[in-house]
Image 1 (cartoon, rainbow, N blue to C red):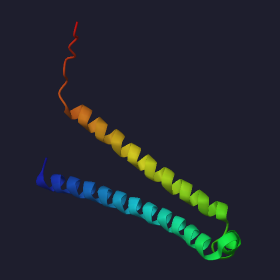
Image 2: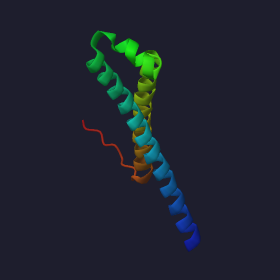
Image 3: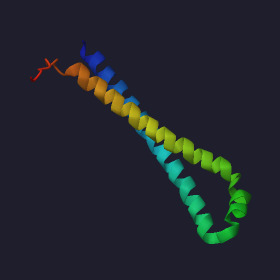
Image 4: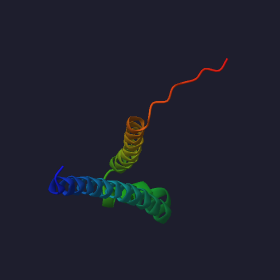
Length: 102
């Protein structure tokens, strides 16, 4: 591999990691913001918090759906990372023979 190809590959990997981290942080911030907004309205307005929340932020079910999608996305990203890590570690580890004990 030529030096230029090596650095180009490293740059591409760094870009992918950068976009992955930024996307992950955006999901976390969005989900936490939605949850904190609901908690704040619940504490501030008491029993009428749903009406006030929907007055300024739109449908409560839409906000809950955003929270559910955010949490599901974080779980999916975690599972994909675990799967990818296991695939890499299996491919790079030497094959061991299984011994049977009698």
